[in-house]
Length: 325
Image (cartoon, rainbow, N blue to C red):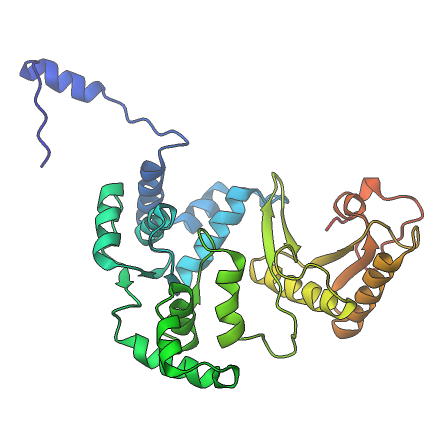
């Protein structure tokens, strides 16, 4: 029990305590997380919404998007590995996820150092598993597997053992062996450091030959997925088609209705050039491979996101009238 010393008398102290008011500001992250966790635990929000009968809005704010993701994650809890255990942002986020019951976590790094730093930050990682790749009994087994997977590339058992001390490779092997469901990385590591192990070990999904990425842009009234902005600098038409299809599938997994705009400096037939023709060819490849997918291209960004900016000659063949991407 906390004890507070005061120079006031009993009555004055009781009056001052009774008059105290808790302050919850936008920067009070710990209070916000505690309030949300108590709300989730003690309030039947589905029943509350039924009684309130609030109409479902047509826009998706960043808060709504984040809340929806958290609810989906909490209803089907997965085990995630976080390889960047030496980053304070990761430790703080891990504490929030555990407090909210959103996921099970494994954090990679020196356990004593991670738990000591978490205590300094006021973060409770009691429910998280912490693994050090350098001392984990899994390291030798992972090294044997990796050496076998990469033997054609000259990887020896000794070199594989050294590589498995890298948190990105060790975390990827945890995913590969189904010890965890997924890995979240990139706060401190480069894109190459994050992606390379997955390319070497897990590889691409069936039917997809191009590795690509997307990022989610949370705008005031909607969430857009942009791909690819990190992996393939100058894609071919075939790679562009792969990127569009993969981006659409990923967007759908995040609850975003896929409507794909194949961006170019030209809309429809308003311009010509090698880059425009590349996008036009890629668009046709997408339509032939995924006939049910709503896709348009080539199209300029403003015409894709705002129907009012489309010139009269622009006919979006596959999108409902007035719809934006």
